[in-house]
Length: 145
Image 1: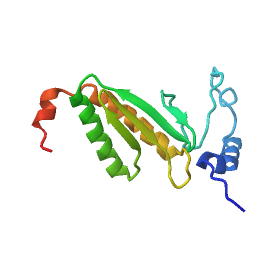
Image 2: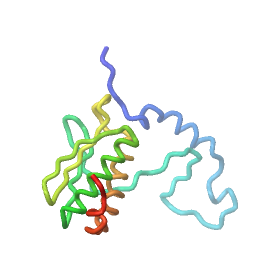
Image 3: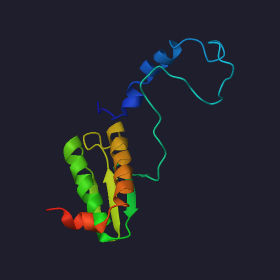
Image 4: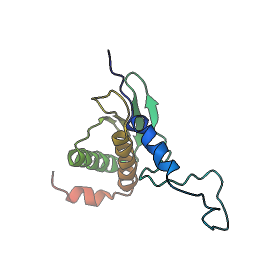
């Protein structure tokens, strides 16, 4: 029998259903004067993932995005920070640099699929990109390679 890889949230689905059922009365029953529609309260530590411009690739499934830079210094800063993040987390993606673009792909190789770890990597890439866009050329020249 071949095991089918699944996302952690799929494997833990019944756990989250039980936790939601155990959380008690809704806002109106707890004495709150109002209720916010379409907002689901949860006692679980899971938060929704912010929507970004990352695409889902196929065969194998992966997250991918192209980052565009106005100058080579900010692009180099992005790549350097991304490499530092990969070393720190132990999770590595694939990126191809061809000025003014850096194409990034990430997936969990053991599962050949996208996991929460890949989504965290994508969020970190977005933050590193925002920081690198404000990188000054004189700061780059001061760094020792």
